[in-house]
Image 1: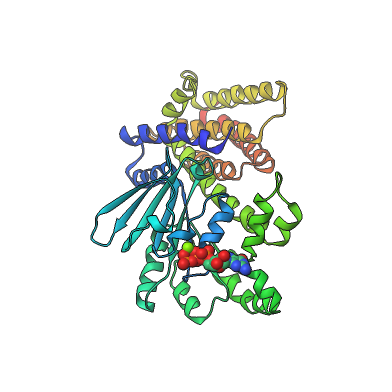
Image 2: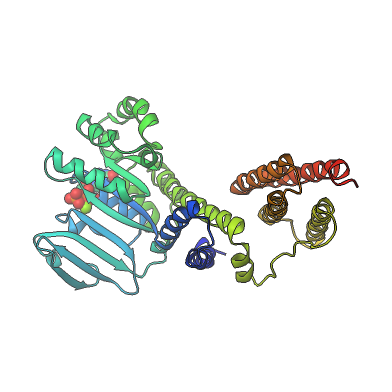
Length: 398
Ligand SMILES: Nc1nc2c(ncn2[C@@H]2O[C@H](COP(=O)(O)OP(=O)(O)OP(=O)(O)O)[C@@H](O)[C@H]2O)c(=O)[nH]1
Ligand SMILES: [Mg+2]
Protein backbone atom coordinates (compact mmCIF):
# COMPACT_ATOMS: atom_id res chain seq x y z
CA UNK A 1 0.00 0.00 0.00
CA UNK A 2 1.40 3.42 -0.83
CA UNK A 3 2.02 6.05 1.78
CA UNK A 4 -0.64 8.25 0.17
CA UNK A 5 -3.27 5.56 0.77
CA UNK A 6 -2.18 5.24 4.36
CA UNK A 7 -2.35 8.96 4.99
CA UNK A 8 -5.99 9.48 4.12
CA UNK A 9 -7.50 7.47 6.98
CA UNK A 10 -5.12 9.06 9.48
CA UNK A 11 -6.13 12.51 8.23
CA UNK A 12 -9.80 11.59 8.75
CA UNK A 13 -9.19 10.23 12.22
CA UNK A 14 -7.12 13.22 13.21
CA UNK A 15 -9.84 15.54 11.98
CA UNK A 16 -12.47 13.63 13.96
CA UNK A 17 -10.35 13.64 17.12
CA UNK A 18 -9.73 17.40 16.78
CA UNK A 19 -13.40 18.12 16.06
CA UNK A 20 -14.43 16.18 19.15
CA UNK A 21 -11.64 17.83 21.14
CA UNK A 22 -10.32 14.50 22.33
CA UNK A 23 -6.77 15.72 22.78
CA UNK A 24 -5.77 17.45 26.01
CA UNK A 25 -5.44 21.16 25.33
CA UNK A 26 -1.62 21.11 25.30
CA UNK A 27 -1.68 18.58 22.44
CA UNK A 28 -4.49 20.17 20.47
CA UNK A 29 -2.30 22.64 18.62
CA UNK A 30 0.26 20.00 17.73
CA UNK A 31 -2.54 17.83 16.38
CA UNK A 32 -3.85 20.70 14.28
CA UNK A 33 -0.40 21.36 12.86
CA UNK A 34 0.10 17.70 11.99
CA UNK A 35 -3.27 17.63 10.28
CA UNK A 36 -2.34 20.68 8.29
CA UNK A 37 0.94 19.05 7.23
CA UNK A 38 -0.60 15.72 6.31
CA UNK A 39 -3.27 17.35 4.18
CA UNK A 40 -0.69 19.16 2.09
CA UNK A 41 1.95 17.63 -0.15
CA UNK A 42 5.52 18.04 1.04
CA UNK A 43 6.79 21.42 -0.19
CA UNK A 44 10.11 21.18 -2.04
CA UNK A 45 11.60 24.61 -2.72
CA UNK A 46 14.11 24.88 -5.58
CA UNK A 47 15.92 28.11 -4.83
CA UNK A 48 18.83 29.98 -6.39
CA UNK A 49 20.08 32.97 -8.32
CA UNK A 50 18.70 33.52 -11.83
CA UNK A 51 20.11 31.03 -14.32
CA UNK A 52 21.46 28.67 -11.64
CA UNK A 53 19.72 25.66 -13.21
CA UNK A 54 16.55 25.45 -11.11
CA UNK A 55 14.07 24.76 -13.92
CA UNK A 56 16.38 22.16 -15.41
CA UNK A 57 16.62 20.45 -12.04
CA UNK A 58 12.83 20.38 -11.77
CA UNK A 59 12.70 18.70 -15.20
CA UNK A 60 15.03 16.06 -13.84
CA UNK A 61 12.78 15.44 -10.85
CA UNK A 62 9.63 15.53 -12.99
CA UNK A 63 10.31 14.10 -16.45
CA UNK A 64 8.48 15.84 -19.30
CA UNK A 65 7.75 18.94 -17.28
CA UNK A 66 9.58 22.07 -18.37
CA UNK A 67 9.05 25.38 -16.65
CA UNK A 68 12.15 27.01 -18.17
CA UNK A 69 9.88 29.24 -20.27
CA UNK A 70 8.63 30.95 -17.10
CA UNK A 71 12.13 32.28 -16.38
CA UNK A 72 10.88 35.83 -15.77
CA UNK A 73 8.39 34.79 -13.08
CA UNK A 74 10.09 34.86 -9.66
CA UNK A 75 7.93 32.14 -8.05
CA UNK A 76 6.64 29.12 -9.98
CA UNK A 77 4.72 26.45 -8.12
CA UNK A 78 4.10 23.04 -9.71
CA UNK A 79 1.37 21.10 -7.98
CA UNK A 80 -1.01 18.23 -8.51
CA UNK A 81 -4.35 19.07 -10.09
CA UNK A 82 -7.13 17.37 -12.07
CA UNK A 83 -6.08 18.87 -15.42
CA UNK A 84 -3.17 20.88 -16.78
CA UNK A 85 -3.72 24.56 -16.10
CA UNK A 86 -1.87 27.62 -14.92
CA UNK A 87 -2.81 30.67 -12.92
CA UNK A 88 -0.58 33.73 -13.06
CA UNK A 89 -0.75 36.19 -10.24
CA UNK A 90 -0.05 39.70 -11.49
CA UNK A 91 1.65 42.59 -9.74
CA UNK A 92 -1.69 44.33 -9.27
CA UNK A 93 -3.23 41.25 -7.61
CA UNK A 94 -5.21 40.12 -10.65
CA UNK A 95 -5.17 36.53 -11.84
CA UNK A 96 -4.59 35.51 -15.46
CA UNK A 97 -5.49 31.93 -16.34
CA UNK A 98 -4.06 29.69 -19.00
CA UNK A 99 -5.12 26.19 -20.03
CA UNK A 100 -2.18 23.80 -19.91
CA UNK A 101 1.54 24.23 -19.32
CA UNK A 102 2.54 27.68 -20.62
CA UNK A 103 5.13 28.43 -23.31
CA UNK A 104 7.16 31.62 -23.28
CA UNK A 105 4.58 33.50 -25.36
CA UNK A 106 1.82 32.61 -22.87
CA UNK A 107 3.57 34.25 -19.94
CA UNK A 108 2.13 37.70 -19.25
CA UNK A 109 4.62 40.46 -18.39
CA UNK A 110 4.52 41.54 -14.71
CA UNK A 111 3.47 38.11 -13.43
CA UNK A 112 4.89 37.78 -9.92
CA UNK A 113 3.87 34.23 -9.37
CA UNK A 114 2.56 31.22 -11.29
CA UNK A 115 0.82 28.09 -10.09
CA UNK A 116 0.89 25.22 -12.56
CA UNK A 117 -1.35 22.23 -11.91
CA UNK A 118 -0.69 18.91 -13.63
CA UNK A 119 -2.41 15.53 -13.24
CA UNK A 120 0.83 13.67 -12.43
CA UNK A 121 1.09 10.96 -9.77
CA UNK A 122 4.60 12.22 -9.01
CA UNK A 123 3.05 15.39 -7.65
CA UNK A 124 0.76 13.78 -5.10
CA UNK A 125 3.47 13.42 -2.50
CA UNK A 126 5.29 16.66 -3.12
CA UNK A 127 5.07 20.04 -4.81
CA UNK A 128 8.00 21.84 -6.37
CA UNK A 129 8.30 25.59 -6.03
CA UNK A 130 10.96 27.37 -8.07
CA UNK A 131 12.09 30.58 -6.40
CA UNK A 132 14.44 32.93 -8.26
CA UNK A 133 16.47 35.22 -6.06
CA UNK A 134 16.21 38.38 -8.12
CA UNK A 135 16.85 42.00 -7.17
CA UNK A 136 19.19 43.38 -4.54
CA UNK A 137 20.51 41.71 -1.39
CA UNK A 138 17.63 43.05 0.73
CA UNK A 139 15.00 41.59 -1.53
CA UNK A 140 16.89 38.30 -1.82
CA UNK A 141 17.10 38.03 1.96
CA UNK A 142 13.38 38.51 2.35
CA UNK A 143 12.72 35.88 -0.35
CA UNK A 144 14.94 33.38 1.49
CA UNK A 145 13.21 34.12 4.81
CA UNK A 146 9.85 33.64 3.15
CA UNK A 147 10.93 30.26 1.73
CA UNK A 148 12.16 29.18 5.18
CA UNK A 149 8.66 29.72 6.54
CA UNK A 150 6.93 27.11 4.40
CA UNK A 151 9.49 24.85 2.72
CA UNK A 152 9.83 21.28 4.00
CA UNK A 153 12.87 20.57 1.83
CA UNK A 154 15.11 23.16 0.14
CA UNK A 155 17.30 22.49 -2.91
CA UNK A 156 19.69 25.43 -3.18
CA UNK A 157 21.00 25.52 -6.75
CA UNK A 158 24.31 27.21 -7.41
CA UNK A 159 27.49 26.73 -9.38
CA UNK A 160 29.73 28.19 -6.68
CA UNK A 161 27.85 29.24 -3.53
CA UNK A 162 29.91 32.37 -3.05
CA UNK A 163 30.12 34.59 0.02
CA UNK A 164 26.96 36.51 -0.91
CA UNK A 165 24.93 33.29 -1.19
CA UNK A 166 26.44 31.93 2.01
CA UNK A 167 25.29 35.06 3.77
CA UNK A 168 21.76 34.67 2.45
CA UNK A 169 21.63 31.08 3.71
CA UNK A 170 23.26 31.75 7.10
CA UNK A 171 20.10 33.21 8.62
CA UNK A 172 17.88 30.25 7.79
CA UNK A 173 16.65 28.32 10.89
CA UNK A 174 18.49 25.08 11.78
CA UNK A 175 15.45 22.89 11.33
CA UNK A 176 15.21 24.03 7.69
CA UNK A 177 18.94 23.55 7.13
CA UNK A 178 18.57 19.99 8.39
CA UNK A 179 16.28 19.25 5.43
CA UNK A 180 18.20 21.10 2.76
CA UNK A 181 20.52 20.14 -0.08
CA UNK A 182 23.26 22.22 -1.63
CA UNK A 183 23.03 21.36 -5.32
CA UNK A 184 26.18 22.19 -7.26
CA UNK A 185 24.78 22.54 -10.76
CA UNK A 186 26.62 22.63 -14.07
CA UNK A 187 29.01 19.96 -12.76
CA UNK A 188 29.79 18.95 -16.35
CA UNK A 189 31.09 22.42 -17.20
CA UNK A 190 32.98 22.73 -13.94
CA UNK A 191 34.55 19.37 -14.54
CA UNK A 192 35.65 20.36 -18.03
CA UNK A 193 37.20 23.52 -16.65
CA UNK A 194 38.96 21.38 -14.06
CA UNK A 195 37.51 23.27 -11.08
CA UNK A 196 34.95 20.80 -9.76
CA UNK A 197 37.08 18.87 -7.26
CA UNK A 198 38.59 22.01 -5.72
CA UNK A 199 35.22 23.62 -5.42
CA UNK A 200 33.75 20.57 -3.71
CA UNK A 201 36.70 20.40 -1.32
CA UNK A 202 36.42 24.10 -0.51
CA UNK A 203 32.70 23.86 0.23
CA UNK A 204 32.78 20.66 2.26
CA UNK A 205 33.36 22.08 5.79
CA UNK A 206 30.67 24.69 5.26
CA UNK A 207 28.22 22.17 3.85
CA UNK A 208 28.71 19.87 6.81
CA UNK A 209 27.35 22.65 9.03
CA UNK A 210 24.76 24.22 6.81
CA UNK A 211 23.17 21.47 4.70
CA UNK A 212 22.28 17.80 4.67
CA UNK A 213 24.89 17.38 1.96
CA UNK A 214 26.57 18.61 -1.20
CA UNK A 215 25.26 17.20 -4.47
CA UNK A 216 27.26 17.98 -7.61
CA UNK A 217 25.11 17.37 -10.66
CA UNK A 218 25.30 17.51 -14.43
CA UNK A 219 21.58 17.97 -14.73
CA UNK A 220 21.23 17.76 -18.50
CA UNK A 221 23.07 14.43 -18.57
CA UNK A 222 20.92 13.24 -15.68
CA UNK A 223 17.78 14.07 -17.66
CA UNK A 224 19.16 12.21 -20.66
CA UNK A 225 19.90 9.21 -18.44
CA UNK A 226 16.44 9.19 -17.02
CA UNK A 227 14.34 9.89 -20.08
CA UNK A 228 16.03 9.15 -23.38
CA UNK A 229 15.64 5.37 -23.48
CA UNK A 230 12.88 2.98 -22.58
CA UNK A 231 14.87 2.27 -19.45
CA UNK A 232 16.97 4.46 -17.23
CA UNK A 233 20.62 4.51 -18.26
CA UNK A 234 21.83 3.41 -14.84
CA UNK A 235 25.51 4.24 -15.34
CA UNK A 236 24.83 7.78 -16.56
CA UNK A 237 22.10 8.32 -13.96
CA UNK A 238 24.69 7.57 -11.31
CA UNK A 239 27.73 9.35 -12.79
CA UNK A 240 25.77 12.53 -13.55
CA UNK A 241 24.87 12.84 -9.86
CA UNK A 242 21.18 12.50 -10.70
CA UNK A 243 20.59 9.30 -8.80
CA UNK A 244 22.15 10.42 -5.56
CA UNK A 245 20.23 13.68 -5.47
CA UNK A 246 16.95 12.18 -6.59
CA UNK A 247 17.11 9.35 -4.06
CA UNK A 248 18.18 11.77 -1.34
CA UNK A 249 15.27 14.13 -1.99
CA UNK A 250 12.74 11.30 -2.14
CA UNK A 251 14.11 9.94 1.14
CA UNK A 252 13.62 13.34 2.78
CA UNK A 253 10.11 13.60 1.43
CA UNK A 254 9.27 10.13 2.74
CA UNK A 255 10.94 10.71 6.09
CA UNK A 256 8.97 13.88 6.58
CA UNK A 257 5.73 12.11 5.77
CA UNK A 258 6.51 9.10 7.90
CA UNK A 259 7.47 11.25 10.87
CA UNK A 260 4.21 13.20 10.60
CA UNK A 261 2.22 9.97 10.25
CA UNK A 262 3.95 8.40 13.25
CA UNK A 263 3.28 11.41 15.40
CA UNK A 264 -0.35 11.52 14.31
CA UNK A 265 -0.79 7.83 15.08
CA UNK A 266 0.93 8.31 18.40
CA UNK A 267 -1.48 11.09 19.34
CA UNK A 268 -4.44 9.05 18.16
CA UNK A 269 -3.55 5.86 19.95
CA UNK A 270 -2.72 7.72 23.11
CA UNK A 271 -5.69 10.06 23.33
CA UNK A 272 -8.27 8.84 20.85
CA UNK A 273 -8.00 5.05 20.64
CA UNK A 274 -11.76 4.80 20.10
CA UNK A 275 -11.48 6.84 16.88
CA UNK A 276 -8.65 4.67 15.63
CA UNK A 277 -10.44 1.45 16.56
CA UNK A 278 -13.69 2.59 14.93
CA UNK A 279 -11.82 3.45 11.74
CA UNK A 280 -10.25 0.03 11.66
CA UNK A 281 -13.58 -1.57 12.43
CA UNK A 282 -12.16 -3.07 15.56
CA UNK A 283 -13.97 -3.06 18.84
CA UNK A 284 -12.20 -0.90 21.45
CA UNK A 285 -10.04 -3.33 23.38
CA UNK A 286 -11.89 -4.21 26.54
CA UNK A 287 -10.36 -3.29 29.88
CA UNK A 288 -10.98 -6.08 32.36
CA UNK A 289 -13.55 -4.90 34.85
CA UNK A 290 -13.39 -7.22 37.78
CA UNK A 291 -10.77 -8.54 40.16
CA UNK A 292 -8.11 -6.65 42.03
CA UNK A 293 -6.27 -4.09 39.99
CA UNK A 294 -2.99 -5.94 39.64
CA UNK A 295 -4.81 -9.08 38.65
CA UNK A 296 -6.63 -7.09 35.98
CA UNK A 297 -3.32 -5.76 34.75
CA UNK A 298 -1.75 -9.18 34.65
CA UNK A 299 -4.65 -10.77 32.85
CA UNK A 300 -4.65 -7.90 30.38
CA UNK A 301 -0.96 -8.52 29.73
CA UNK A 302 -1.56 -12.25 29.46
CA UNK A 303 -4.41 -11.78 26.97
CA UNK A 304 -2.28 -9.43 24.89
CA UNK A 305 0.65 -11.83 24.99
CA UNK A 306 -1.62 -14.65 23.82
CA UNK A 307 -2.77 -12.41 21.01
CA UNK A 308 0.77 -11.69 19.92
CA UNK A 309 1.75 -15.33 20.08
CA UNK A 310 -1.30 -16.21 18.01
CA UNK A 311 -0.35 -13.63 15.41
CA UNK A 312 3.18 -15.00 15.30
CA UNK A 313 1.76 -18.43 14.61
CA UNK A 314 -0.31 -17.06 11.73
CA UNK A 315 1.09 -17.65 8.25
CA UNK A 316 3.53 -15.07 6.91
CA UNK A 317 6.27 -13.12 8.61
CA UNK A 318 5.41 -11.32 11.82
CA UNK A 319 5.67 -7.63 11.07
CA UNK A 320 7.62 -5.34 13.31
CA UNK A 321 5.06 -2.55 13.13
CA UNK A 322 2.18 -4.89 14.04
CA UNK A 323 4.04 -6.08 17.10
CA UNK A 324 4.94 -2.51 17.98
CA UNK A 325 1.39 -1.37 17.61
CA UNK A 326 0.14 -4.07 19.95
CA UNK A 327 2.82 -3.22 22.48
CA UNK A 328 1.94 0.46 22.37
CA UNK A 329 -1.77 -0.32 22.76
CA UNK A 330 -1.09 -2.56 25.70
CA UNK A 331 1.23 -0.13 27.45
CA UNK A 332 -1.35 2.63 26.97
CA UNK A 333 -4.12 0.52 28.45
CA UNK A 334 -1.93 -0.31 31.43
CA UNK A 335 -1.05 3.31 31.96
CA UNK A 336 -4.72 4.28 31.80
CA UNK A 337 -5.70 1.52 34.15
CA UNK A 338 -3.15 2.58 36.72
CA UNK A 339 -3.74 6.24 36.27
CA UNK A 340 -7.44 5.83 37.02
CA UNK A 341 -6.53 3.74 40.03
CA UNK A 342 -3.88 6.25 41.09
CA UNK A 343 -6.39 9.08 41.06
CA UNK A 344 -8.58 7.17 43.46
CA UNK A 345 -5.53 6.57 45.65
CA UNK A 346 -5.65 2.80 45.18
CA UNK A 347 -2.03 2.33 44.08
CA UNK A 348 1.35 3.81 44.69
CA UNK A 349 2.88 6.64 42.75
CA UNK A 350 5.75 4.37 41.67
CA UNK A 351 3.63 1.91 39.75
CA UNK A 352 1.71 4.71 38.19
CA UNK A 353 4.82 6.51 36.97
CA UNK A 354 6.49 3.26 35.85
CA UNK A 355 3.60 2.35 33.63
CA UNK A 356 3.34 5.89 32.34
CA UNK A 357 7.03 5.87 31.52
CA UNK A 358 6.64 2.48 29.89
CA UNK A 359 3.89 3.81 27.65
CA UNK A 360 6.03 6.77 26.66
CA UNK A 361 9.01 4.58 25.84
CA UNK A 362 6.78 2.44 23.67
CA UNK A 363 5.92 5.50 21.62
CA UNK A 364 9.63 6.07 21.06
CA UNK A 365 10.09 2.47 19.96
CA UNK A 366 7.16 2.84 17.63
CA UNK A 367 8.86 5.76 15.90
CA UNK A 368 11.70 3.44 14.90
CA UNK A 369 9.45 0.82 13.36
CA UNK A 370 12.08 -1.86 12.88
CA UNK A 371 12.68 -5.30 14.27
CA UNK A 372 15.08 -4.14 16.96
CA UNK A 373 12.48 -1.72 18.21
CA UNK A 374 9.85 -4.48 18.21
CA UNK A 375 12.11 -6.70 20.29
CA UNK A 376 12.81 -3.82 22.70
CA UNK A 377 9.10 -3.15 23.00
CA UNK A 378 8.27 -6.76 23.82
CA UNK A 379 11.13 -6.83 26.34
CA UNK A 380 9.76 -3.71 27.97
CA UNK A 381 6.31 -5.26 28.23
CA UNK A 382 7.78 -8.35 29.86
CA UNK A 383 9.60 -6.14 32.34
CA UNK A 384 6.40 -4.34 33.14
CA UNK A 385 4.70 -7.65 33.63
CA UNK A 386 7.39 -8.77 36.05
CA UNK A 387 7.22 -5.51 37.99
CA UNK A 388 3.48 -5.74 38.29
CA UNK A 389 3.61 -9.35 39.37
CA UNK A 390 6.24 -8.47 41.98
CA UNK A 391 4.15 -5.70 43.36
CA UNK A 392 0.90 -7.57 43.20
CA UNK A 393 1.86 -9.48 46.32
CA UNK A 394 2.78 -6.72 48.81
CA UNK A 395 0.45 -4.02 47.54
CA UNK A 396 -2.75 -5.92 47.17
CA UNK A 397 -2.08 -8.77 49.48
CA UNK A 398 -2.17 -11.46 46.81
N1 LIG B 1 25.94 22.41 -19.08
C1 LIG B 1 24.92 22.50 -18.25
N2 LIG B 1 23.97 23.42 -18.45
C2 LIG B 1 22.95 23.50 -17.60
C3 LIG B 1 22.84 22.63 -16.47
N3 LIG B 1 21.71 22.94 -15.80
C4 LIG B 1 21.14 23.94 -16.48
N4 LIG B 1 21.87 24.29 -17.57
C5 LIG B 1 21.58 25.35 -18.52
O1 LIG B 1 21.64 26.59 -17.84
C6 LIG B 1 20.66 27.50 -18.33
C7 LIG B 1 19.77 27.98 -17.20
O2 LIG B 1 19.05 26.87 -16.67
P1 LIG B 1 17.63 27.01 -16.02
O3 LIG B 1 17.29 25.66 -15.50
O4 LIG B 1 16.65 27.65 -16.91
O5 LIG B 1 17.98 28.00 -14.82
P2 LIG B 1 16.96 28.68 -13.80
O6 LIG B 1 17.67 28.72 -12.51
O7 LIG B 1 15.66 28.03 -13.85
O8 LIG B 1 16.88 30.13 -14.36
P3 LIG B 1 15.78 31.27 -14.06
O9 LIG B 1 14.44 30.63 -14.02
O10 LIG B 1 15.97 32.24 -15.15
O11 LIG B 1 16.17 31.86 -12.74
C8 LIG B 1 19.90 26.73 -19.40
O12 LIG B 1 20.43 27.06 -20.65
C9 LIG B 1 20.18 25.30 -19.08
O13 LIG B 1 20.12 24.47 -20.21
C10 LIG B 1 23.88 21.67 -16.28
O14 LIG B 1 23.90 20.89 -15.31
N5 LIG B 1 24.88 21.63 -17.19
MG1 LIG C 1 13.75 28.81 -14.20
